[in-house]
Length: 393
Image 1 (cartoon, rainbow, N blue to C red):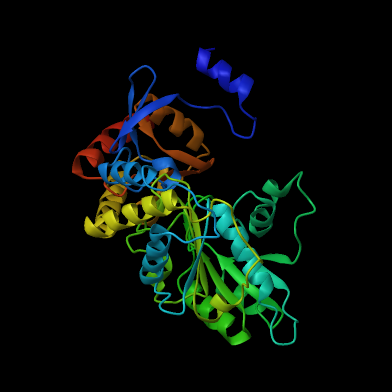
Image 2 (image 1 turned 90 degrees about the horizontal axis):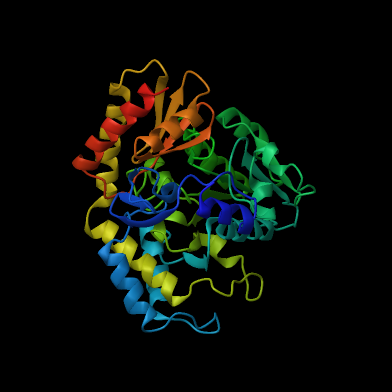
């Protein structure tokens, strides 16, 4: 066992599986390990590193803000925090009535959304139920885990916070489940941890109609799909709907830890002072970084790049012609590959040996999510290395 693996074994909490490599630096779509081996990063920290590694815009923003003001607590506001709130209201379409809350992660954003849902009790205080989807993923804190429709992840942690029911991802299930007792419905527009599974056609439109009819909040979890990854700023925009709240993280910080809850309309009036908070949430270093990342995505046209490159990426995968590949899924640069056999972990290992980083959410699915800056050269390298990985199986 190498020295660094011994250190992982001795010093790190055993909450994750075996570490695959010791990475020491990165640039663009590439990372490098301790031995100087370079890997094409087509996972981007699980859809986090929107601008890749060591992007000069991020480096400059972090350096400048660190030399100015890092943390002041939420007794005060700072210019980067206010700028980011205004930017997210504009990009999400929340408008003048929208409001932003900042935390440090996607799980924290969904914790805030859980509490928001609890506050939507209705005029007579009869709303208590929160609906989530089977096979969904919303985080690993106790509240966000309760929203997660994966029973295997619940094991050992029951009893979880109550009042959450899981339904099938069908319009029929929505119609049967949503009534006046429902306070909120939370959904991922694409289930990333399930293997990049899209919702059925018409699902989000039906969810919007039914929640509005019954006074329930529609909360969209865009933690993995947001910030341009699917070829639109947010995946719900592809359905032409406006939610009551959206949770964000991952790509909005480009690798710097930050999460956000953005509310729309009446949902913006539910929280009152003292009902939620975070010591580090919305600190100037995190919000300045997020402003730089989102500004660069906008300036460089990376939302459109995600759409175009995503189509090219799927064409490359389908063009391999392997009998193992039965379908591609997802949108933009969040791509799932459905496999005929339960060999996804083996393909991931073979890919790493070929100098390519991808992921296996389950035995029959691959998840591919490169930085939004990906171009022709990186796609060509992916094609070569992905074919080599499949050939090794």
